Length: 321
Image 1 (cartoon, one colour):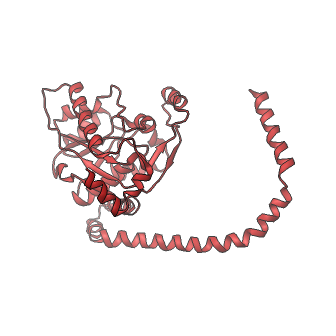
Image 2: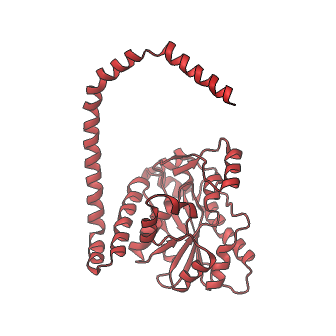
Image 3: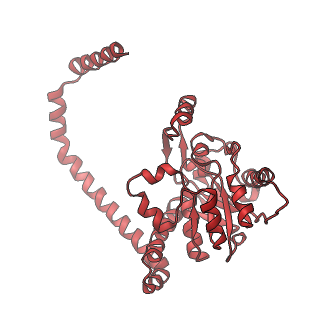
């Protein structure tokens, strides 16, 4: 292995020496530097102007709500609404984000929200922001333990109420009349589900939580969430082995495409004490799969998802549905 690496190093070295003129490259860099600066500075100014417009949009759209919260003196509540305003603005500008069926989420009382996990759950961030402003309620998302080891995440978790949920902590939050969001597939589904297929294995902790708390389950699915961000499918077996061994989500993610995103909130599944956790898991999975079949183009297509941002193509799609 060492000999192979040494040979590769020598090959790169020979290529650099024989085919790249270092002095010429440095001269070109020096010569073009003023030109690069000339074009980069206007681009930076344009970016600064766009950011200023972004901030003004946030303040004009949500200022009254944020101002009222600031007057209460609750720092977390005020901070939460400021963050929610930023994400709400980002969702509207970048993805034309919408929520359909928000009335299915109760205005009061507990509810367990179950959702399909995209490569990056950006739709959950947008949805949380919408619920904060339209329902004046906080959703407590259950996140993977490894995220709490990421620098800077802890303060964000404290603000937004994120928890590394056990059955007991989740049940306690619901018994307090709060909203809780869980993706049974979690990071595993985020990394290795490429065609909107649920990858829950035998995970039914969420079903046990709902039965213990005696609360309804609200399923939701976001259209085109996999067209916004995707995981690289090449080397899938290798990354599966890494994940199985170390629980490390190392499959590369690419994207950030400004596709049209619509979250579809399904009808609540009421508490039924006669159901077993296995039966309830199957019932919730069927509800989410139904949302996928009714609202998602399969297989997913990034270009068509981008075109849905254009009103002509959006209306055409609605007519076909």
